[in-house]
Amino acid sequence: MAIAFLLNGESVREATAAPSMTVLDYLRTRRHLTGTKEGCAEGDCGACTIAIGRAEGDGVRWQAVNACIMLLSQLDGALVKTVEGLGQGDALHPVQQVLAESDGTQCGFCTPGIVMSLYVLQQEGVADDAAMHEALAGNLCRCTGYRPIVDAARALCAAPPALRTAAPAVAAPPSSTAHGTAGELHLFPDNLADLVALRATHSEAVLIAGATDLGLIPSKKRRGFPLVLSTSRVAELKRIVREPGALILGAAVTYADALAPVEAAFPAFGALVRRIGSRQIRAMGTFGGNLGTASPVGDTLPVLLALDAEVELAGPAGSRRMKVDDFLTGYRATALAPDEVIAAIRLPYLAAAEQLCVWKLSRRYDQDISTVLGAFRVRIADGVLVSLTAAFGGMAERAKRARALETALTGAPWGEQAPKGIEAALAADFAPLSDHRASATYRRAAAANLVRRLHLATTRPDLPLEVHAL
Image (cartoon, rainbow, N blue to C red; front, side, top):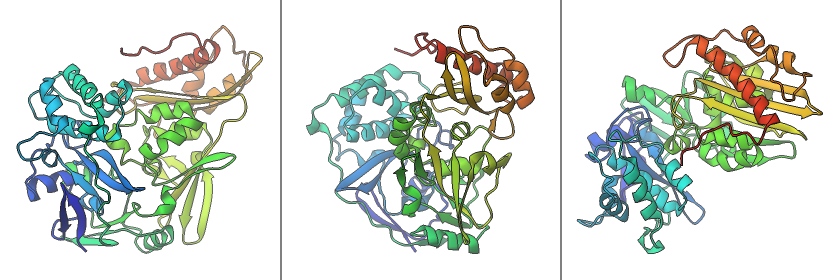
């Protein structure tokens, strides 16, 4: 039951390390690859960034991930590259060379993670500024010298193709459907039927997709998982289906894989997805995982509510569908039965003349948890707000519809004058708490201002509402 992968070109079969050990701990303590650093240990700073390759078509798709919250068992069947695996002897890799020449190395602690993020960007062959900034958004260098790093990225992406290194043709095959040692057992069913059968037998097991939330337990609390059911090999949970009336995302579809179809169908939702964590997080985190955790500040949940999305659940008795609004029952609580798993999420397309607007307020623009998030589906005709579905995150014990607001504004004039009664309606809907991110007073004011922003965005599309960095 060894975990098999290729590490910097070397074939590894690991049978003695606990499968819940973080990849960061494994690299540093078992393989002595100390170039990969521990900074925050929660997937924020990017100092632990490594590159993971998976077979795709005739080649390999490389993605940057956070080693600090990734479980060792998640490496099975993957190509793994750390900063030590880039150069050849004393010769630096082009990424390392250009970063040094641009004076972007800083103190050096964050540099290996930056190198790996740029390595993945280089493999993608993308050369525009937006892609560079997005690739580096998950690397929070504390030495404040971002300009030289961006200069290095520009020089790297402008380099002729000969400087780019070719990816290996194949990745290592998964070794087993079970990995167990040190009192732990991680099971990797090959299909949905097997996953449901295991879930029915082992309702106490931890269900893991990307582990971007659960990965904090071994990383920060230093506790492993005795029994894990993984969704990583269940093809049915990774499907993306474009039906005539809806976009269907399998529960194990990652943010990275869903970005293009979501952005095509719902541009405002796509813009939000680009702000969920970093590219490292989006390569691992899944839509089903975000829904299943039922966090009151889960970024996707208000949008699912605004779209009147449905969730498909699979269990021993078959499948059932329900509205996401009914699925979320309280603080980190759902209607999921102990023997069920989330199979898919169904996103109905917008009807004719409908608009979707989504805005996230957070202390940092990139890679931060929402303070307040508002999602609005509206239809306006002849200066009247004909229909409104509004949902907020960060305003209650769970993401919730603002039904009093919907009732107050539906049918109201929607012209030059801002709508009245916003604060009163929101007060009937929500009684937010104060915490370390914001006070209740701020949250109430911010939510009301998002409704006013909705009014401006839909009546004055020519009016600039955001400040963009040059």
